[in-house]
Amino acid sequence: MQDLDSRSMTSSTDPSDGKLAGLRSFFRRGSVDDGENEPPDPPAIGDLVRSGERVQLRRHVAANRAAFQRWYADPEIAYLLRHDLSPLSDRQSRGYFDTVILPLSLQGYCFAIHTSDTGELIGSTALTDAGPESPSAALFRIVIGEKWAWDKGFGSEATRLVVDQAFDVLGLDEVQLEVFRHNPRAIAAYRKVGFQRTGAHTEYIPPNGDPLHVVEMAIRRPADAAELPGEDRIRAESATGSPDETASQV
Image 1 (tube, rainbow, N blue to C red):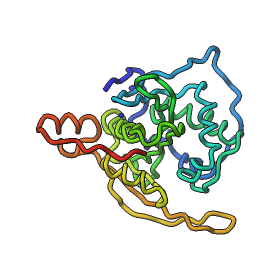
Image 2: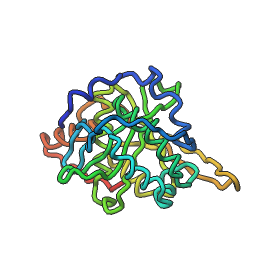
Image 3: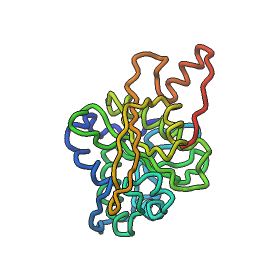
């Protein structure tokens, strides 16, 4: 998801400390009030957290808000990501960014996705609360908001980088995710990264109760080199001459 910025090491390594608690319901449907406070002369790009061949993970900054709001106002993106399948309003997305994304990024659990070659912002990804029954796990989320960046491998590499960060830096034992059954491309990509299906459930979207079929997947901390995520796995395979299989794009 391998360069680490030393400032990314200041976040807590224990997701059970309450920093992530309660965020899951917000990501599903919630909205919050506008955030108004801006730091003086905010930076145009966030600090580097982790780097790959195609993408970099960086801290989110206020300058990313406009792009984030544009992504979450897009009906096509909402259909692939939102549990109510509806775009966010301008007020919802601003509040979401200012009161959830920015604080979570400062804590080391949310990252802006930039291209490695030009530094362009193309998406966002996060590790959020997986619930009290999984204190050493987190729920993975990602959006590649710039559509020109779809089907180019950016999302797959960003997923690997986040998994690496979760195990190497945050001390997690498991990364979980939920993906809609009507998004088979993402399901295939997650499998290539190493996620395995762990279950499924159906939600019912108001007001008509339309069914939404959700696939549950997870990847656990590797026990040996053959199971290593991301670039560590690639290095291990290179050392033994085993080919790396290119993941489908997210």
